[in-house]
Image 1: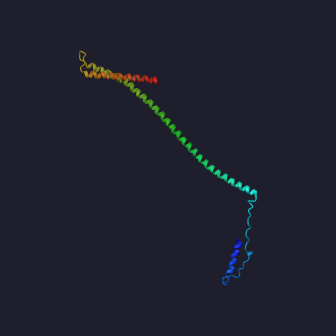
Image 2: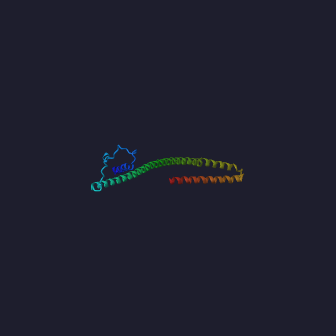
Image 3: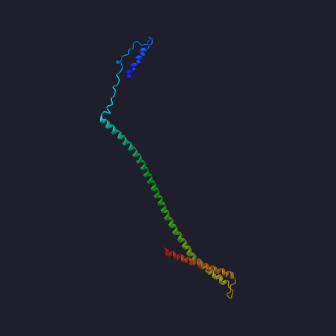
Length: 184
């Protein structure tokens, strides 16, 4: 094809220039001066069944390679997911352990506070309430004249009311302490 095209171009140039000034007399077209064109390739691939099978095999292998690439990408995503999950699981376990430790510390603090409250209740029930009862008894005896009649009736009523309230308090505390012992 190339040689024929070149020949046509050179012939057209030689024939069209009749002017002697433009013609180069030293150049003469000779087709043997040009290399021969490459031989045309025949389609032997479609004729040879072995080559057809090899082409099919190559195509199938490229499809398998593409599938492996997709599988590798999915596998990488899955491994990243598992890695992230393990990291978050470790964080959650650490947080749960921290919460458990804090719960144990709070439980210990609650027990200490209960003991502290119980000591104060014992202090009030065993020391302060009997002391105030004695003080009220002393005040009531001083509130009497020589015949035993109260000097100030209103003071006697208030003191009697205080006595009743203190007895209720001691009974409630005693009752709650017994309930606490039977509950535990």
